[in-house]
Length: 344
Length: 256
Ligand SMILES: Nc1ncnc2c1ncn2[C@@H]1O[C@H](COP(=O)(O)OP(=O)(O)OP(=O)(O)O)[C@@H](O)[C@H]1O
Ligand SMILES: [Mg+2]
Picture (cartoon, rainbow over the protein chains, first blue to last red):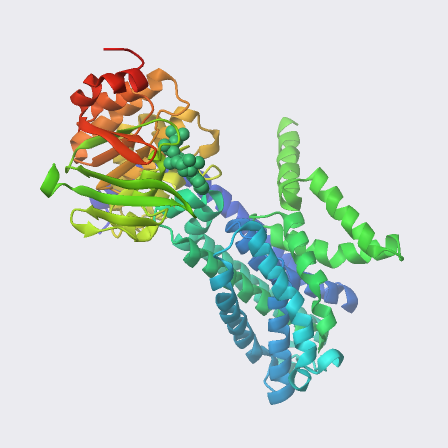
């Protein structure tokens, strides 16, 4: 079968003008996947070496990373702003909690439902909101976040009001031999990996191209036939879905939801974290998740009276040192290290 | 021209919010023709092109090969084969030249792969879009050497070429060019117009070009219109317009 046909095909491909570029792309893509594989291996090993509290912290990093992955799609890749993503996180968290609380739904089964509800809500709210731009859009999403807490308190019968809902945590199946914290960690890790692959696939598709065009030049994208409102709304709904999924896992991990956990600060912190992590970058959500988990507690250690001030100052410091976020800083550092190594 | 024109615009009115800019513009362009739009700053030339590509609301009638375009959304109009190269180019700065070009084919039905990667793996053969990429390279050889570069790092002239190249990726039936010479050296501008002419001749693409450089525009156009304050004040063949005393004074910089 192979033979001459294959040879000519190879020759034809060798002559293709895109070859050099594609090879470079393959190389960077391959490097990215290798880094991911190593990270994943470390991530699978870590919970067996750490005390439960640390495992819990890492689990929360993953939860935040999933939410930030969604926000990165919207802000980093589609260039739209949302000050209300905490609301979708809360929808996922409460969706899962209510299903577990009312109908004894198995924890894992609540994930697709929570994600779907957040997606639908994102679609419904995005449709009118995405006709707006910049500050107007920011205001509408802000309103969503502000509206949520009183709403949760109001429907006490379902949401438990200000008292919130307390739930059991998922029980690790016996065959795994894992402790509860480890099981939770691996659940969060699985969701994170799926979310990463999903986001990656989405960005490499036609949708991803359209989003980048919209981000970089709306008018030019429009005359090329990209339907602005359609793609913006889609990006909003997808990012809401990721936030909802993250919220759902949050419920599993914490075992408790109350309106005050999802106050406006959550939305603002999410936005700050993805900017700090690195907008539009591959590793930004993960770095942002680390930032979101550890920096507030570090701030608390530094100055117990005003953790908010320290947190704010740290955000300013990171943006000053690394205007493209931690991901950009990490990239710069790797490059200079390889340069130094090459010289020697 | 006239009855069986390819693009007919009748009593077109358009504006921004309450402010009316075009007060009833009518013109017709024959298939495969180049039509130049001249006029002073603020006359509404850009608005006219935006109206044709659906970016501003319009009243009146716009027909392309008989199909009604008035009131259609920009993406519908793009799907009809109208490519608009906006004033100031509008390339996607952070994306590479190749990504920019491939995005030009966004609405095409025969696009098979929007990414080069698939072809390398050999899973998909060269698509129609790949062939068109080649075609654009023959018009703009400089782009071929810049494929991997981000558009933001191109010179002004190269960016304009990229913008036009990207428009060609749509395989347009109608090409709208808004001041392609803006900010470019005379040599580059001439080269650009030579290429536009070549595209027009080889692909039979109908072109509407808005241009401050009236000399150049009239040198490649068959017919021209002068727009002032949202109204067409003069129409005719390129020679007629060039010979017009008023035009000569206002736009060509000499007296006949
Ligand atoms: N986005 C906008 N919103 C409101 N008014 C606008 C907008 N764009 C243009 N105008 C107004 O419409 C009128 C026509 O503008 P247009 O850009 O069509 O002129 P033009 O002929 O292209 O001028 P130039 O040669 O300077 O490019 C001007 O008075 C301008 O102020
Ligand atoms: Mg103009």
